[in-house]
Length: 549
Image (cartoon, rainbow, N blue to C red; front, top):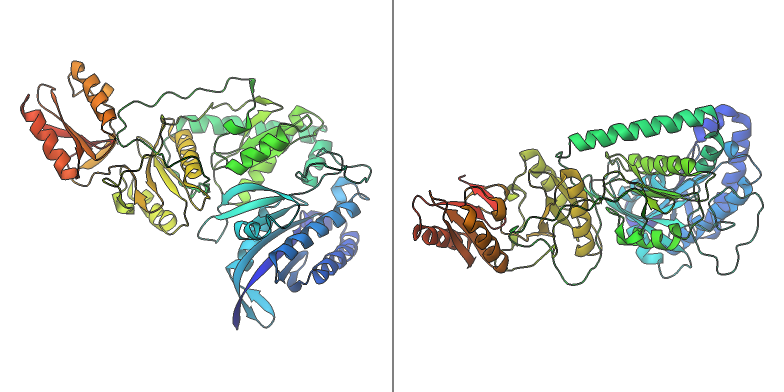
């Protein structure tokens, strides 16, 4: 056996079992013809087929560029051939490509690279191509195609999320509707998604009674999910995606800026999106910056009827050029849920926008006031799962297994009663922070706090006492009413170092501000309180309400 790095190409036919069940002889005949096309393109591109099983093809390429170019050629050639068949009989491949370290044994290839390529294939659109981040880095500036970042995806049997991109396939007439006449793309036409043929099937069948009932069931299921989320907003989660394990994602904003060290000022309430609010790509929550760019360039300018569906892990799907808004809504929701299920993301998708109007029922997720991150070397220390405040032991175990070993950039957000969400493997800390806060806020129903970035705690995490909640001095009942505003103001001004708050039996507060250590802040707070009150005790350290260990 020998090891090597190779671009791994995985493809199989969407709905192959159904095609065989409907007409086995005709399906097998066409499979042979389509496989001849696939094999020919792979050979011409310098690839080698190392395994086949039924409708599946696994091939290796010495170049990621040639692998992607070959996949595009295959999909465009087969799309043309499919035009001769009705939607229900079209034979379309999904293709996944990654670069990985594999083991060669008797001509076959084994290893995570092969497994990841197969998982990416499952994420791909029908008739589409899904590639890993490593492939995108190799081909982004070498091929004249566009890519849509779908963020980090949790996939079966792969321990860390896989950051994936969809290759934007050219469409025939500027819409996603089924092309009836083959024609060359107009000069300067924009690359966009070749949306799955299955959407076309839905467009045809949704008019029938079965389609209507299917749509009705979706709507009822969505309503049940919404009610369930409203009642159980406190369930924990992590990325990837985000998340999920949470979803993973991150991109640059200006300079580093996360949660203020002391949550002294209550976070402003979320401003819910009103029914009919105009769609704005840069306001779509949970998704990556690249996905927002895609929506701004493609969805906003796409023809009606169209819709966008998403979930809080950042799984996204959009369709346009549909026969009606109802069909567009149904198609986007189904496509998003398929993508979520393929990545084993447990959270349900919901319709975010129909046409150019936001219809998302939950409004904007609550997030804290800016800045979301403020770095302070005096309080930062190496991340340790066992020290994360407010979490149950099962949550800390999950962080140890999924967050600690994951690739940067990554961030962890926690909610006021122990909800949490994290993203890993993103391009920048700023995007990771935004997505973690948005997703955690949606789960918790309240603004969350970024407690860790990459391998460090970025807020003052108590070790001398136990954190039991977020400290809100403006409403803290143990502090006398006429002293709360002063505590709030002074904590807000103490932007560096360790802070602590103590209170005596009469409710008079004592403060330890900008201390060099947790112990020093505690001693300063107790000493200050002792000047004005008796029986003083510490009630807050950093941004947390605390109690004795």
